[in-house]
Each structure stands twice: as structure tokens, then as C-alpha cells.
Image 1 (cartoon, rainbow, N blue to C red):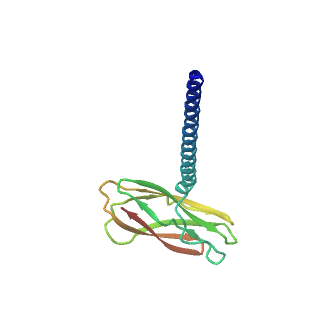
Image 2 (cartoon, helix red, strand yellow; image 1 turned 180 degrees about the horizontal axis):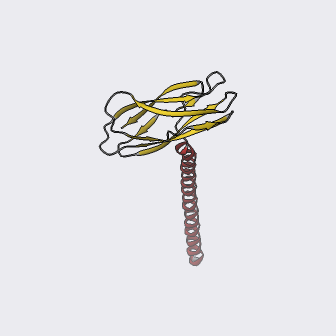
Image 3 (cartoon, rainbow, N blue to C red; image 1 turned 60 degrees about the vertical axis):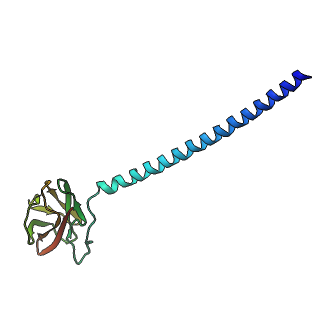
Length: 169
């Protein structure tokens, strides 16, 4: 009788222990699942941000048949000591191929921003895009503030001026 009672107590403890282990395992599994889901969400957000980071700055202007020319990057923000490459694009919706030229003029202030661009002429066929690469380079001593340039674009009979603002933080 005593042995049956001991077995009964041991089996009761064994059942309790088994139930506790199952509960702990379920909790651990839930924590693991939640962790994996959170990591996947964070990773997918990073993956979604990569194309946005890699694409050129957004355009201020959209081309139309009446105004066929320039898309200038906007929202250019750099920290001192940082560099950035941009693309200035010209869309040709005119009837003939055009030869375009690009130049920049600094608008006021001290210019301690290294601003480099390729100013070679571009022959742009109809319904095509011409693109100039622009490279901005700052140093650690570049003063914070907004630097403004005027992009002067001449394409055949059309000419256009667009502001290019670079903010240094």
C-alpha cells in the first residue's frame, strides 16, 4: 500500500514536472517566434530602405511637353566630412536632337564646399535622357548651412535655370 502511495506521489510529481516543462517549452517557443518575427520585420525595413538610399535625390520638377528640360536633385543634405554623388537629368521631348550644356553659378556666401561636375556637352536624342554626374565633397571644417547654386542649362533654343541647394549639418 505504501509503495502504491509512493508511486502515486512520484507519478503526480512527474506529471507536474512534465506539465511545467511543456509550459516552459511553449513560452520559450513563443519568445523565439516573436524574436524571429521582429528580426524579419527589421530586416525587411532595411531592405526596403536600401533602394531609397541608393536612388538619386528626388526631383523638384517634372518634365512636360511645354517645359521639356531639367530635373535637378533636391533635398541634398550632407554632414561635414561627407560626400555624395548625384545626377542632374535633362529630358528631351523636343522634335530634334539637341546639344545641351551645363554650368553652375555659386549664389552668394563663402564657398568652402568642393563642388565638382562634368560640364561636357551632351547630345540628347528625342525622347531620351541626358545625365550629368555631380560630386559634392565636404571636409570636417565645412561650415554648416545652406549652399545655393544655380544650374544653367542650355539645350538648343531652350534654356533653363534651376536652383540646387545643399544643406550641410
